[in-house]
Image (cartoon, rainbow, N blue to C red):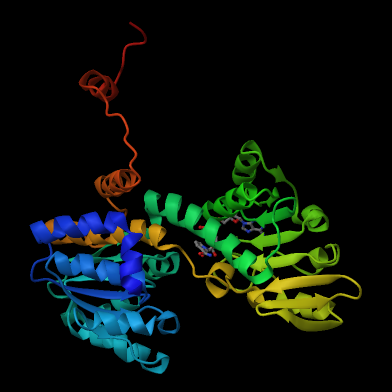
Length: 392
Ligand SMILES: NC(=O)c1ccc[n+]([C@@H]2O[C@H](COP(=O)([O-])OP(=O)(O)OC[C@H]3O[C@@H](n4cnc5c(N)ncnc54)[C@H](O)[C@@H]3O)[C@@H](O)[C@H]2O)c1
C-alpha cells in the first residue's frame, strides 16, 4: 500500500518505468542497490525490474528501513534487510551477487565491491547519492565509472532546495505547532539547502535573516530580499534559528547568551554538531522535556527550546523529503543506470550527463502539465555561431 501511495507521487519514475517496460535496457543485468529501504525506493525497484534488471537490495541505513516495504519487495527482488547488527553482512550479501550496476548511498556497497577485486569483473559502474559517499569514492582508487547524482543540477534545485525547505518547516511545525507568520526566522548557512529553508520560511510569512561566512552567498541572500547580518546580531533578534551549514558550533554560548526567552533552535545540517550542545548544557540551570522532541533549557529566566536534540530536524521530527522530490533523485538514478548499460565510461567519478538532467526536467514539467517553447531553427543556428554578428 505504502509503495502504491509513493508511486502516485512519482510520475517521472512512472513514465521511465513505462518506457523501460517497452525497451528493456537493463535486460539480464544484476543491479545492486544500497539505499534507504523506503516506499520511494520500492518505486525505483519497480522501474528497474520493468527494465529487465535482476534487483538485489540492502539498506544504506538499517535504522531507517521501513520493514513493511522490505517485506513487500521480497516478491520481486533479493532483499537483505536484517537487524542493524547484521547490516555489514547484508551489504556483503549484495556485493557477493557481483552486480553489474550499483546504486549506492554512502559508498558502502562500492567500497565492499572494491575490497574483492574479482567481484568487479564485468561491472559497468554505479551511482552515488550523497556528498559523504562521493568524498569516499574520490579518495579511493575507483576502477569503475560512478555518476555523482548528488551533484546533478536537478537534484540540487529540487531535492536540496524544495524538498529540504518544505520538510524542515514540517519538522519544526510538527514538534512545536507555532505560527511562523510574523516570527523572525534566522537561517544560518545559505547554500542550496539554506536557500530552500529561507524560501520556505518566507513563504509561511516569517521575516527571514540569513547569516553566512561566504561573501558571495551573503550577497545573493541580500539581493534575494533577505536581511543579512552576523550571527551574534541575529541571535538577539530571532524567534526561530535553523542551522544548515555542514559545519560545527554555528550557534554556541555567546549566541545563547543573548537569545530571547522562548527561542526555538533547530538544525537541518547532516550532523548534530551545528548547535553546540555542550555550551547549551553549560549555560542551563535546568533542562526538561516540554513536548516530545522539544527540550527546554532554562538559562536562568530565559528558556531556549531545542528540537530533536539538535539532530537533523526534517528526518528526526518529520518524514524527510516528500516522494515527489525523491521522484527526481531516483529518476536520475534509473536513467544513469540505463546510460551505464548502454554506454561505456572511463573509471572515476563523473557528472550526470546533461541529456539525463534535461530528460528528467522535461518529464517533471510534463507531469506538472507545463509546456515550454523550443528554439526555432534560426535561433538554434544563431546560438551555435562562435562569433555572432553584433547587430542586423
Ligand atoms: N536536512 C536535509 O534533508 C539535508 C539535505 C541536503 C543537505 N543537508 C545538509 O545540510 C548542510 C548544508 O548542505 P548544503 O548542500 O546547503 O551545503 P553548501 O556547502 O552548499 O552550503 C553551506 C553554506 O553554509 C555556509 N557556512 C559554513 N559555515 C558557516 C557558519 N559558521 N555560519 C554561517 N554560514 C556558514 C557556507 O558558506 C555555505 O554557503 C550539510 O550538512 C548537508 O549534509 C541536509
